[in-house]
Length: 248
Image (tube, rainbow, N blue to C red; front, side):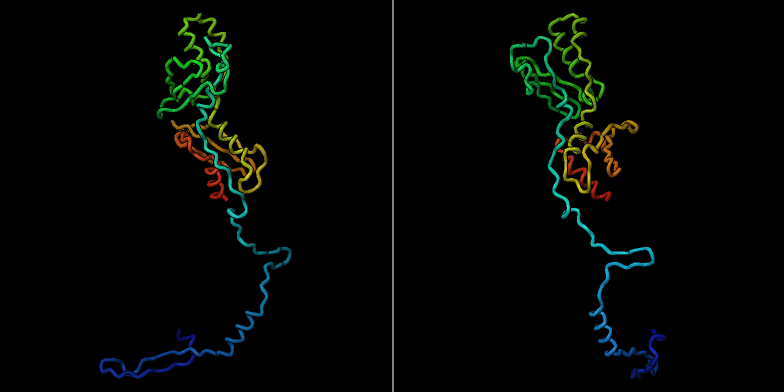
């Protein structure tokens, strides 16, 4: 501080046990110069762009994604495994009954972390079937053939005939397909997205099944494990939008 204050002053002390004088430095303020600088600042024009040689430097106001992008739709994931497990006819079906081919014939829902229940509306007098959820999560599992075999055993049908009735149509990756379709159908994500820019697939890490969502337009990849995606109330569009805002 002393080198910034050219004038030195001393302050006398009235105490006995204190030094007789204390050095002090003062700062002189030129109020006329202050007013001149204030007037200059008020009259100076702010230039948002500066050209330096061949470079142009400019300042842009920060944008808020909340104000420039519409609100995405509220689309829960639901239970893709249950939605996939439907097909007709089956052994013993009444082909003249409209409920046999109804899209609402089957009700498949999860009763625990490990099992689903299969209800057949065309066979209301029969007991509901308990199905291990890991079978439905297996892309190679043929749920229609499983149900065909179950009914054929009840009617003591010949195994050779039952094999002919098998469609050998696997479940496929129902969860990945549902996530992909939901994301591709949402037009209001921040930024520019082309149709069908999302893909989703399974990737196993150690003993855990993980799903990878890939936004090909932004080259953005995010991951979620199967236990997280087992929540039917999970809002897929909001979930992806949250990660998108974090990444950009």
